[in-house]
Length: 500
Image (cartoon, rainbow, N blue to C red; front, side, top):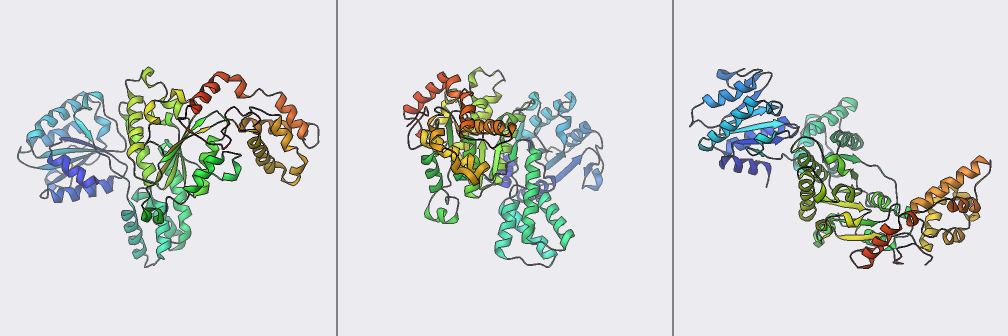
């Protein structure tokens, strides 16, 4: 349901204390005003710490710098007098014992009165003793229609017309920003060159990157990685190429749903993260990287709030790629985590969203230790497909050597014996192959000459691959992959990276 419908329902159902976490104070207050008009023009009272109550001349300034007095004002009104009471930034006072007690008393009293108290705050911060009394209502970021309307108003103000395609680009680039930020960045464009131009899309994207950085939850991850940079993994690349146009309007008209995402399971250094980057570049979609550890915070309810914020932001920026790196480290061993159930609640929110989302957010999750993952995340419906990424076969190692040598020695690639390099590096991962090339370059540079095939093999002989040091873990992964629980990313079906 839309925010206005949800709020109206809570008000009619006598939900006494409503908490709306949002940074868009002005926009949410306008939405509340629209709901109040639908509810027989219910009066609205607005309070903040500096100015007290505002709007009504009889109450102007009452409760200034006194949060408890702001509640006492509500308590003194006639029981039959309806009202919506908006308290700005009131989360800062909820830890006060007198404020908390008064709120709980009002909550009980309002069950029989046509009054609702609404707390506006930029983040969720609710003490334990109020968690049952307060209902949290999310306020979504502006949708495409709201953004289009705002940009159209600015264009009218500057007596300017834009081509439909240019306007669409500006709207798409602005998704995920608050209306304040959209106004600000386009206002700067108007101040700079007296008009809004198609080239201002880049300014909007930079504002978006800054917004995402400020959340400290998601990273806007620029990438230039291409499918050609991935050596091997032909089955996986073919699967991805087939879905390249699945976000288009043509795909919707055909009846295709948005792709949900994929889970990449396998050994460290085999190209799972590189694949996530290459997908974003190949599909021309923004890449958002989520470090799940950033979702967890110390205050009660804050972790769950950050999780909802992450989902809201990702959906507002759709279509996009959401890269969840090493998901097994965050949610492995849920039963043994002694955090009062916070990890379980965050996990439940993420898994429910993965199963029910209809937005164009393609999730790429990577995991090294599949045994640590809860079975719920492996269940069908969370991802379109689960791929196992094993160690590269001999032919794939040859491709990996070619990819990396092409980057550093494209002019004399033929001087390197790729077949010999591939044959003499069994059980090496892609990351380990890249590292021995760096080591070989150090060797050649230290002797004031170019590095050779022999230098690479010398570096390889001094490197113990992960397949040797973590043999038990890799054997367990091999058994899991052989059981048919995942699709093999490579056509060779090779797991141990032998000389097939």
